Amino acid sequence: MTPTPREPAPGSERRGEHTRDRILDAAEALFADRGFEGAALRDVAARVGIRTPSLYNHFPSKEALYAAVLERVVEPVLALLAEIVQSSPAERPDSRRVVGAVMELLAQRPDLPRLVVREALAGGEHLRPLLQKVVGPVLVRAQEAVRATRGAERWGREGVPLLVLAAYHMVVGHFAIAPFYRELSGQDLLEPAAG
Picture 1 (cartoon, one colour):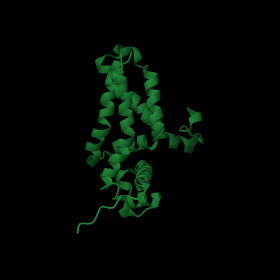
Picture 2: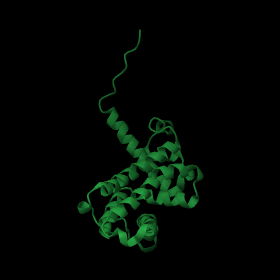
Picture 3: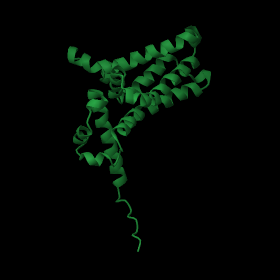
Picture 4: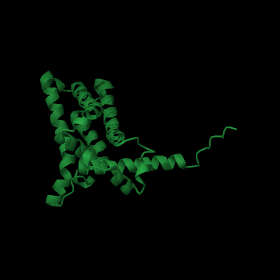
């Protein structure tokens, strides 16, 4: 006799999604604070209040968890940039509004820029393919978005990548340095009133 598959308990899928989100939040903070190598899965589990083996119900490995953390915030940025590129010239926002929109998205995940900077400085050889897959398209799409904005011709073909890199450093640097700045000055630049 073949057993009948059990239906999930009412609300169990929502609880699973909630736990997955809590795992991603904890992992994002730990990866940003300690880097990929320094963040242990047992520490992620402890922050979430679950046992370490339970993490594997949601993510098969530390690398998969890291990828999910990065992809969670990069996808909305890619969608925003794609929307700009695909819009008609009359509908395209100016570069100031684009940077503002990206800043708003990153404000929802302020640890991510710190995480990316940490990995870039560490060299993260085994994470380079993941960063190329996740962050690389953002830089390419950003160049397309800049070229599609009004007045972009003044930067010239060679200047657009430099402009994107400068904007990337400005935006990522804001979030990466804000915790350090808060420690030095007492002013929290990540608070909405500070913007």
